[in-house]
Structure formats: structure tokens, C-alpha cells
Amino acid sequence: MHGLIMDHQLLVADIVRHVERFHGDTEVVSRLPDDGGRIHRCTYADVAARARRVANVLDTLAVAPQTTVGTLAWNTHRHLELYYGVSSARRVLHTVNPRLFPEQIIWIINHAEDQVLFFDECFAPLVDGIAPQCKTVKHWVAMTTADKLPTMKNVQPLSYEELLAAASDQYEWPSFDEREAASLCYTSGTTGNPKGVLYSHRSTILHAMAACLPDVMCLTARDVVLPVVPMFHVNGWGTPYACGMMGAKLVLPGAGLDGASLYELFESERVTFSAGVPTVWLGLMQHLQKHKLKFTTQWRSTVGGSACPPALMKTFRDDYGVRIGHAWGMSEMSPLGTYGSLKNHHLSLPKDEQFAVEIKQGRPIFGVDLKIVDETGAELPRDGKAFGDIHVKGPWVVSGYYKLDNDPTIDGWFPTGDVGTLDPDGFLQITDRSKDVIKSGGEWISSIDLENVAMAHPAVQEAAVIGVHHPKWDERPLLIIVKKPGQETSRDELLGHFTGKIAKWWTPDDVVFVPEIPHTATGKISKLQLRQQFKEHKLPTA
Ligand code: AMP
Image (tube, rainbow, N blue to C red; front, side, top):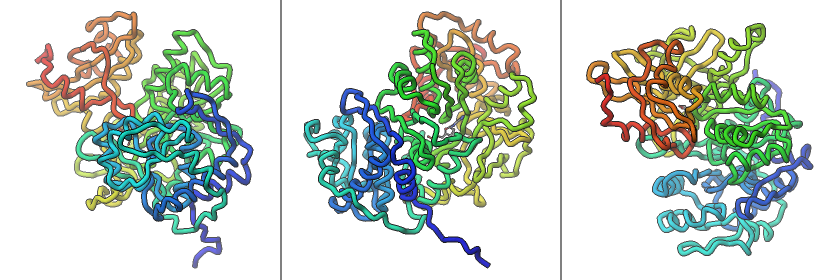
């Protein structure tokens, strides 16, 4: 017997309709990349009306339903209009990461077969370089006014503002199957070609609702949200949709992701919630420390994308009163999988024991099921000690990659490629990507644990640990350090710093100091590059 409930399809257009009707006067603030960082103010009602104009523009440009529309853009109200307008008009929004190499961008755009590409004017040189090789793109739209259109060699750009001004703000959002695709993101695979994850309307809505939950981002209509995470990185972690659902004020930082620009926005817009990768918070922290600044507002944040060094969480908590919630996920999970909120029984623990729980990557959000397995696929105990491969499933977890035939799942579970432990409360602790784990004498050493210890040293700005070949142990850890400007330390002092903090045999065999550590396009330490760079490194213990 079926329930007698409306069979309403969950569509991105529902968010647009809701936010316009019930939070129409709530502000959306943007720092404009095409206007020297000028602050632009509008409301959700404006965004919704302009999203309808976007839909009319797509019709005029003859972009067929269910085809892809690319963006190369920072976080602004215009990008939000595309988020809402493209998907609601039954096209697929393909957010391209401009930090990738041009060859990767070309590959991705061709693979996705983008019909139109909307780009921020600052990316004009990039677009000019790639355009001749992007055969499917019929129109290149610069997200700026007609008077600021960039002069380009290979492209005759259209002006976003001109197109919108000429289009009607009336559009009837179509109704269709919620399982149709809403957006597309490519994973920045460290090997092989990037893989496309195609999110459905249904998965997008369910994921965004889950993101709002109190034990997750806890978003409300009273919040002022500044997503530092770019909208080209896994749906901006769901914030563009979640904020619309809740009617939270949005503050979109454009290209200004440096400490000074962020601090200014946090203060001037009275931000209450933010989200970003650890490197961003490191940058902000350095700015605060250098200029002896404090916040006059109370805010909280989500950190994810790579392991957050506990020292960073502690500094934000103790020195700035900012609670950082640690989240874990991936493109294949829309991205949220786990979130670090305490349970009731943790509240009676001493502060340092609570903190030991908070620095883990959190526990599964309802909707995501999670298990750890050994090499044979057998489930390992949730004892906080056994570590194995993390498998997940749920309504916003990938079931296959775009235009790839092979099924990535195993018995209905998606193997994440991450390795970790699960404790009896369900808290996950990521020890590594499976290919980054250091295999020493048949045992595993967690590079993340070692990096966390190193990051707590006062002279360390950034730390990375990789396994390098060792004739006896197969691999041993090498610690790679960027020192804080003006700070000194030595190999022996750093190695001494590990004493008592980890099992003795985990202590790195050597330390190298470098001016900088390479990062990937999504802000993660590029272990692949480091492994190549230090392939020939001779350990003193070898
Ligand atoms: P992406 O698909 O680019 O979002 O990358 C996802 C990968 O980032 C995951 O598979 C993890 O290896 C890593 N990651 C994400 N969040 C965390 C976290 N909180 N701690 C450790 N690693 C993380």
C-alpha cells in the first residue's frame, strides 16, 4: 500500500521558488572580481528573477535541455544565478575549476561537451588559450557588463549583463524527474583523467537539507554565511543550495581569499558561519596574528577537504572564539559524509578529551552509511583502533562516473580510497588516502597523524609527510617542512618534538626544509609531486 502523500519531485527550482517567496528581501553580498573587488548588494528576490533571465538566455542561445553549461567563476551573485537558473531550467551546471592546468580544463570541457561557457572576466586569458580546442562550446559569456568586455584573440565574448538585460524575468520552471542531472563536477584525480560526478536534483536537495542539520552546519535564517570554499569545488559543499533553503544571508568573497580580504568581509558583514579548506584558515590566522586582530563577531566554521591540523582548530577556538567543525567527504559524496559534532555523553568529559573527539573527522550524517573493511572486504570492528578502507553508500553518493562504463561500487558500497578508523560512537578518523599511507615493515603509519604533530611546533608553517623507499622497512616517513618566516628550528629539534606524542617507531627518519609545499587545484598537499621530488632522497637510516 502506497502512502497518500504528494509525489513531489525534489528539484533545485524548489529552492529558488522558496527563497524568493519567503526570504526575498534577504541580502546576497558579493565582492566583484570584474570591478576591482567592489562590494555588490542584491537580494534573493533579485537572484531568483535573474535566474529566470538566465533560463531565457539559455533558450535564446538554443542550449538544449539536459545538456551541460560550464562555468569558470569565483563565488559571486552571478555564479549563484547560474547555480539556480541553469539547473532549474533543466540544463546541467558544470562548474570547472580554473586552478587546474589548461590541458585538464580542455579535457574536462570536451568530455562534458559544454555548450556555453560562462567565465569571470579575470579568466579571459585562460579562456583565450583554451577556446580553440573546446569544440563543443558555441558561446563564451564573460560575466561582466558590456563596457568591461575583455578583448580576446580567439573568442568574441558575449556580455552576461547585456544578455540578462535583454531577457525576460518571467519563466515557468519545468517539472521533471528528480533523478535527472542538476550539476556536474570532475574529481581532480591524481592519476589518469579526471572523472565526472553527475549530481541529480534529488541528491542535491537531500544533501543540502542534510548540510543544514544542527549537528552538521546548523544553518538558519539568522545566519550570515561566507562560503570561502569555491563554488567550483564540489557544489561549494552544498552551501549555495543550503543557504537558499534556509534563507541565510550569503556573503560571496569573489577572488579575495587572502587573509586581509576575508577578515574585512567577516567584520563588515557580521558573518556567523563560514566553510573552507585548512589552507584558507591558515592564511587568515597568519593575517590575524601578524596584525594582532580579533573578531568583533561570534562565528563558527566548517573545515574539510583535507585533514585540519588540531593546532589550527585550537588556535581558532582559544584565541579567536571560533568553533571549527571538522567535516570529511569527497566529490563522489556531494561532498558531505561525516561531521564532527559531539554527542551528549561527551559534554561531561574534560575539555582536552572533548577536543580529542572534535579533531577527528566526525560521524556519519544521516543518509550516509559508512564501514571500514580489510583487504578481503571483511568489515573491521568499530573500536577506534582497527584501520581499513572506508566504504560508503547513501542517496548522495556516486553510483557511476559520467560516460564511464565500469561500476566503481562493490556490493552497493562506494570504496572511497581513504583509510581510517571508526570508534564506537561512529567518529571517523582519516589516517590517509590509501595511496599515501606509509607501509613500514608490513605495518601502516599515518602521514596525517605525523603532519598534525609537526604542525603543532611553533616554527612550522606547513608540514607534509611522505613514505620514501627504505631497503629494510620498504618505506619510512620523510618529514617535509616549510618554516614560518623569521623562525628557526632544526632537524633534531623537530624529531625530538615527536617524542611521547606518537609510537616511537612512527618517528620520521629524516626532515627536509623547503621554501614551499606544492598544492593541488583543490588546495590539498600534492603528495604525488612530493613523492616525485623526493624519489631519490637517501634516508640517513638506510
Ligand atoms: P575531493 O573529491 O577533491 O573533495 O577530495 C576528497 C578527498 O579529500 C577525500 O577522499 C580525502 O582524502 C580528502 N579529505 C576530505 N576531507 C578530509 C578531512 N577532513 N580529513 C582528511 N582528508 C580529507
